[in-house]
Structure formats: C-alpha cells, structure tokens
Image (cartoon, rainbow, N blue to C red; front, side, top):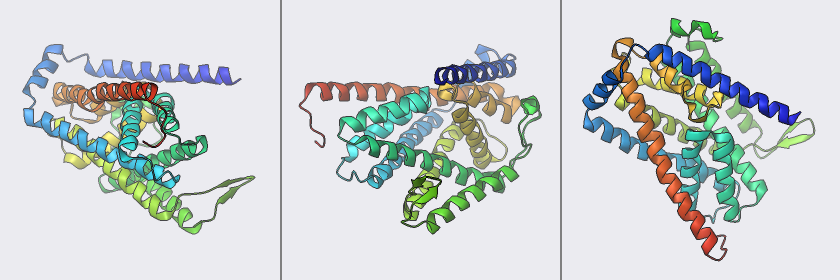
Length: 316
C-alpha cells in the first residue's frame, strides 16, 4: 500500500511538472532565443551585482532558521560554522531538488555526524517547517491584504479556488494569529490531541521564527525584483507574485519548482516585456539556485572528506 502511494505521488508530481511545462511553453513560444539573449545582454551589470549580494544576504538570513531550531532542541554547544553549513547546504539542495528528500537527508547526515540524537533532529526539522510556513503565511497575508491583485484570466482553466488575493491574505493572517494565540495560551504546557502530546515552541521563539522567515522572503523577493524590468506596482506587487509562485512551487513538490514557479511569474508580469521577464528568471536561477548549488556541493564534499579522514569528534 505504501509503495502504491509512493508511486502515485511521483506520478502526480510528474503530471504537475508536465502541465506547468506545457503552460510555460505555450506562453513563451512567441519569443525567440535571440530576443531572450538580447534581453540578458541589455540587463545592467549593477542589477546582477545587486542580485548577487542580495542572494548572499538571503542565505545568511537562512542560517537563522537552523540556529533557532538548534538552540530550541538544546544543542547550544554546536558551533555556528557547522549550523551555517547545514543550513546553507540543506536549503540549496532543497531549492534545487526538493526539501522532502534532499534537504531533510542532508541535515540528518550532518547533524547526526556531529552527535545530535535522532529525536532532536526530528524536533529540529519540525521547528524548521513551522518557521517557514508561518513566516510565509504572515508576510503573504500582509502583502495580499495591503496590495491585493487579481488572478490573470490566462489561469482560469487551472480552476483555482480564488480569483483575488485579498481574502486569501485575510485567511492566512487569521491562521497566524490563531497559532500565536494558541502558543501563548499553552505556555509551557503541551497540547493534547487524543493520545498524543505536542509541545509548541515558546512564544518568543515563535515571534523570532516569523521575523526571520519574513526577512528571508523579503530579501528573496527583492533579488528577483532587482533583475526584472520595471513593473506596475513596484516591489510590493512583485513580492506578492513571488510568494504566490514560490509557495505553489513548494507545494507542487516538483524539484526546483521548475515550470511551476516560472509559468506563474511569466503569467502575472507584463506580456509586453516578455523576453526581459524570461531573461530575469534565467539569471535569477543562475544566481539564486545554480551557483549556490555548486558551492554547497564543494563544501559538502570537503566536509565528507574531513569526516572520513579525521577521528570522530562530535563537537570539534
């Protein structure tokens, strides 16, 4: 039964990818490679430099996710350099290949090699998931309410359950407020669900989590915005579109969000600047996904060599 469910899940992901790829092809078939190449060549150098610096800042902020989680599970002696490696490699491989397989397995490999017990690793992964999703809900809720936008008519056949983002934003904010209230009311007392008891992180940690996640998404959206042509509504609109596309890519489980993320960005942004939008997406992929992947792979290779060649030392 589990094997059947696994095969069905993979088939569903494949179908989502193929559908997104077809939609993307349908949107881009009117542009030529020459137009896209010219748009890349016309992109100001300082835009690329700024996007690169924002990417570095973004991955530094991402370390905060793991740092908070490591402290919460009680591993206060683990050096920051190790936490930074686990965070950087975990997120880079998650973004490129999917969090379920690569992000989780890389963190398990690193933290277990450094002496962290399995139960604490599981707790750490849970807090990372909570941090990400409630940060997304909080920031997306604010953006969708403050600067709402309609779903393009080109996506009508996808049968989305909403045609405007305002009430989606309201719903997300209510979820966040409900979680924070539940966290405050259950102070130091585990919640009971039937036979299980679930301990929520302290309220202060929850607020720190949401703040870090919002900072992460604000900078990630700014990275893409820096590369895009001028857009009506400016950074706030691009941020809202970025978050909608990013969450859709994560939920689709398509590795790297290929097709899903790209088709939503193309669909929402101006059609008259199509080649420039596609050029921005390609450069964004290189700067935010592919170059960090090469760096993370080299760092993991060096760490594996050290783990296999040196005597075991869990806290050195």
